[in-house]
Amino acid sequence: MAQLYVTDHQAKVGIDNARIKVEYADGLVRTLPIESIEGITIMGNAQVTTNCIAECLKRGIHIQYYSSKGLYYGKLSSTQHVNTERQRAQISLTEDKEYSLALAKIILKAKINNQIVLLRRYRNKGDIETEEQIRFMKILEYKIDKALTIAEITGYEGSAAKAYFKSLNSLVNVPEFKFKGRNRRPPRDRFNSMLSLGYALVMNDMYGAIEGRGLNPFFGFIHQDKEKHPTLASDLMEEWRAVIVDSVVMSLINGFGK
Image (cartoon, rainbow, N blue to C red):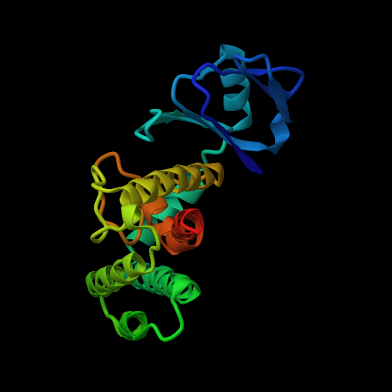
């Protein structure tokens, strides 16, 4: 299943014979079978017809809206996949401390491992500093496995994240994209702006995938509950940040610099 991203401000998204049709201002028309679409992301002022919205809602296809600069506005989503029995089981599991602890260990150990893989991909031969940070991260990964509370786990993960971003910055080849650690709301440099946009897109794709399986995105296991924040989506995307977003950002920047 694919995500359709529309970034042309003058585009019009409609439905024609069970196909999503995107019409551009220059007359270009592109179509996709609606069965192949899992979600539609509108970035900017593109228009979506009422008929298209209705058909997407019938089929459980979510439509999400961003500003042209990547600010997330919200989404339209169907109730077709709501499963109350599954959600009751989900909520019950969030109260199970042993289950939550075990799940947190699996996700955050995988996150650190993926970060290490990315650092090793971009490090130069003989890069002692990066290797030292990797060793430190592996120690923290081991400590996570032995932790007794989620607070301990998130503390170790936070320390690993600081080491990771410190090393990642040293591996950026283009001076204009150098950064000082992870920052957001708003991001204060080009690198973090790219990360924030990528994480927002992944977050909302994860949100749609969770809803599509009858679960509730707002009942998670690792992150603390926050008003209007889909904590389960936050939990499940942690493992994939480095794999999907960080790797793409590094490839674009270092590739551009060559």
